Image (cartoon, helix red, strand yellow):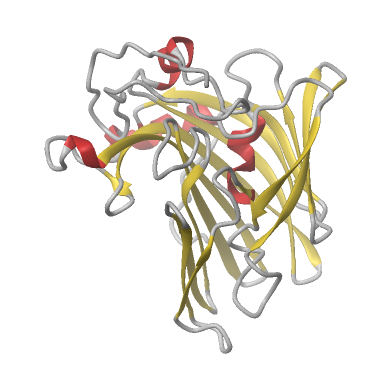
Length: 311
């Protein structure tokens, strides 16, 4: 067993908080959450990246915008939510890397708003190695109605809960055995491509692992079952690293990643026709920019606030 001892000295305000305990790596393919990692991701800032988005929906390619937010947080294991400072027992806390991916586009008269959240544990927790997801969620808001789906990975089981406006879905929940201690979440693939989630591949390596299908792909009665397999690969092409994920239901996701730190995703695409290309990236404490004047920070991401009476 390889052990990384990370000396961390400060609690940081806002969404991000540096973990106090050493991150225990219990799988050879787990990411290295070492001092170099926390120098970037334990600094109290979040990374915000904007993308030009193409998203096929209702038989047409829609143009839109995607924003990916990556930040470290301290999680409360009992509730699987962000732990506020001084509220929870330290024994209940562990560190995670969070990905928020927001995708917005117009579909005729009304707009579509998609959001997924992925939380990857940066230390061994619930009998699972560092780098494995602990929670994923997905939601959609559009003029027809709302859908929300959540999966929590426990020591032995996966708990899934879904709420939906649409007939045949409604309010549903299930608990089923998790297939193995080390598993992949399709919703965490963007973190995986950056070396932040299990399993870390060497250049030219290919590996098949058990995978939880994306919350969007496995909507109740609308797609495949929860679990499947994914074949992961890492290659170099044209000066960028290409991380490819082929799902056992026939779908594919591809991430083109810069070769130098912080290994941002320059482009992501899917076999269904989704494509997003990086526009701008900035590190900031965005949770402190919620006053009216905070809108100016959008310029750093080459984004604009919507004028009045626009969707």
